[in-house]
Length: 249
Image (cartoon, rainbow, N blue to C red; front, side):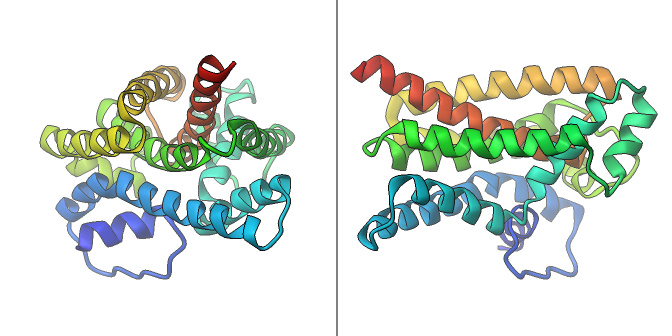
């Protein structure tokens, strides 16, 4: 139970204050990352069901869904995306990029990245279509959050300290395989074989992106993990949109 609460505390803004926990509990929290994603997805589906009844227009509904997700995650992943964009487009070396990611100020490229990702989410949610939208919302939240478990298992941490490092230190093959089984079950239940295929594609995308990141700064950081979640959310929505186009186009 403590590990699940730690996952909630790390990935959402729910007022949880888990004071004492072991490295083992932190590592096992990774198993629950996709479960937290499921919780977020169900919350968005509930809103998506309620808002049309209240008379909201589809475009407004999509904007509200994106804003609610930002609120429940505290904008932490967006902050990571902005910091990562500023750092990697700075043209600086490894140490300077790590320093930029620690800077509390946001640059022009970071702002543009935030605007772009939010507009993309709203637009893609509109493009998904009513029938496929629950699947898109659920998979978007589940697969993106599991993707960082894969990244933490495959790549080293670039800093000597940091919140994400606490998870990585205790992560082992057993924990990773259990997390994989959980997310595979979720993917199949949500979208059948297409869900399993989406999991494979998202895994490949997360690997390629973070392989490039590791070449640049020697590993991953909390900011790059947050950026990975944001980018994988977009990737899932694109997969659903393209699949729907192939089926109904």
